[in-house]
Image (tube, rainbow, N blue to C red; front, side, top):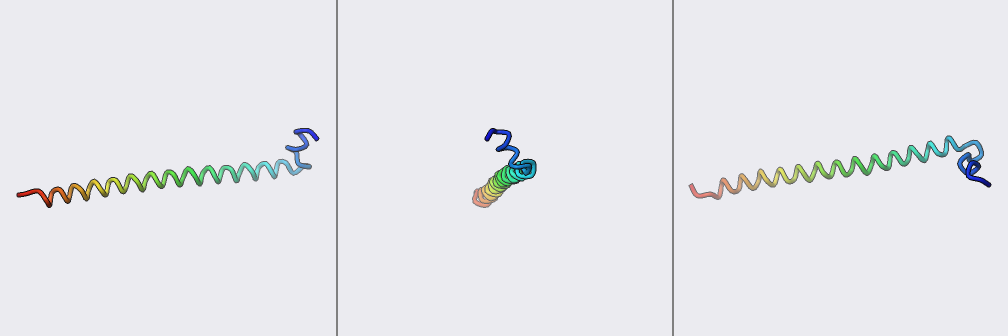
Amino acid sequence: MNLKDVLDMGDYGVYVWSCYGLVLAVLVLNVWLGRRALADQVLSAKRRLKIADSINSESSSPS
């Protein structure tokens, strides 16, 4: 049994390896989109905190 036979998988190699490639692409995309969404949410939370701090400092400053 050589490497070509393993990769060929009895003439189903193209189907099997393309499925593995598709699954790998979906997993990578899932991780990438999840990290991007997390970064967007963290940025949004920081902006909201900054706005809240500025509102609180304006209301608490003596006039």
